Length: 489
Ligand code: GLN
Image (cartoon, rainbow, N blue to C red; front, side, top):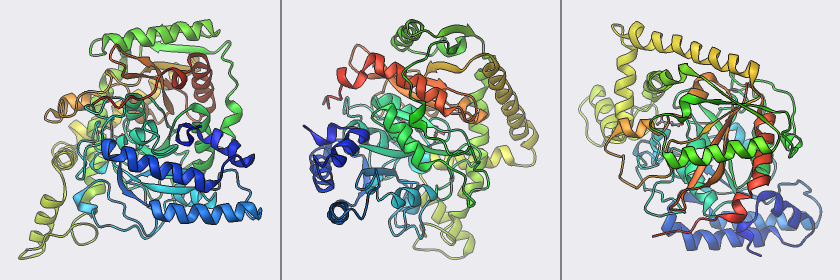
C-alpha cells in the first residue's frame, strides 16, 4: 500500500481500524515531498518538522482516546493567500514576501478545530491573478502529468500538489476559475462554492464580490467532506450566508436518473479545442446512459462574461490592493525622499507586471470619466448574466460545459500574451459573475495523455446536486484507477 495514493476517506478508514498511524501518514507525505517537490515546485513554504511533531502528539492522544475526531491527523495544504496565524502568507508576491499573518482565516480555524495538520502553503499566481501560476514571484510550478506544462492557475500549487500526491487534499480560491481550471489541467476535483457559502475572512482579497475559497481533492467524496468542514455562516464575513447544516456526503447517491442537464452551445464553439469537445460529448453520452435528460440550449449572454469579469475584477483589485503601500502593509523600498516616493517605489518594486496591469486597468475603469462607460455597464451586464443563469435553472438541474478550452499548455507559451491567457478563463468566469457553484472533474485524457476537465454548474446553494452528478459520473468512469500523472520530462 502506498499511503500517499490514498484518498482522505481511505486514510480515515485505515486510521479508524488502526491499520496505520498519523505518524506513518505524515512520514509518508514528508518523504514524498522530499522526492517530488524539487520536480513539481508546488510549495512556497513547508512545515514538515512541525507536522511530524504534531503527528506524534495526535497519535498519543488517539491512543488514549482523548481525540476521536474523524479528521484528527489528516494532512492538508493551503493556498498561500489564506492567513494562518504566525506563518507567512505571501500571495506569491514580493510585496508580501515577509508578511506573517497575525490571525487565522475562518477556514483555518475550522481545520485546526479538527486537528488537521497543515504541511505547508502552496504556490499561486501573484495575488491570484493568472491562469498558469507563472506570475508567482517565487517559482514556476510544474504540471505533474508533464513537467514542461503549466498546472493552470491561480491555485496551481494546490492542484499540482494534490495530483502529485504531495498532499491528500487542499484549499484553493476561485475568483474567475482559479480552483476549477487548475483542477481540470491537473486531473483532480475542484469546487467553487456558491458565493457566500464559505467565509472569506482571512483570504487576502482580490475581487471581493467574486472570491470564494473551495476544496481541491483527489475525488468527489473527499471534496464533499472538505466542503462540510469549511462551509457555514461567519459573523466576520458579512457576505457569508446561512445555508443550514448540510452533510454534503449524504448527497452522493450514485444515481442521476431523471436529472435534467442543460448543455449551452456557446461553450462548444470556436476557441474550444477539438479533443476537449469530443471528450465532453462522450461524457454527455455517459450521462444519457445513466438516465439523465440532456438538452442543448443557448446561454447567449456568456459571450460578454469575460469582458465583464475583467472590468469588475480589475476594478475591485485596484481598490483592494491600495493597502499595499509600504506603510500599512507590505514591502517598503529602501531609499526614498518623501511619502509619495515611498508609495511609488514600494508599489513599483513590490508588485509584478500582471498585478500592475490589473491595478492600472481597474483604476481606469473606475475613473470619473469612464465609470459609466465601463464599470457601470459591466455591473449591468453582470445582472443580465445572473438572470440568464436563473432562467436556465428553472429548466435544468445542472449545466454541463468544458472547464477549460484546452488541456495544459507549455510553460512560457502564453505568458507574454495577456489576452491569450485571459481566454483560458472563458468557460469559468461567468459562474463567479452569477455567484453560482460549479465543480470540475476529470472526464478523460487527450492523445498526449493530458487530463480534460468537465464543469458541472448548479443553481445557488445546490452544491448537493452537482456533487451527486459529479460522483455518479466518477463512479462510472473511474478516472483515477485508469490514469495517473506520469511526470513526463
Ligand atoms: N485567471 C483568472 C484571473 O486571472 C481567475 C483568477 C482567479 O480565479 N483567482 O483573473
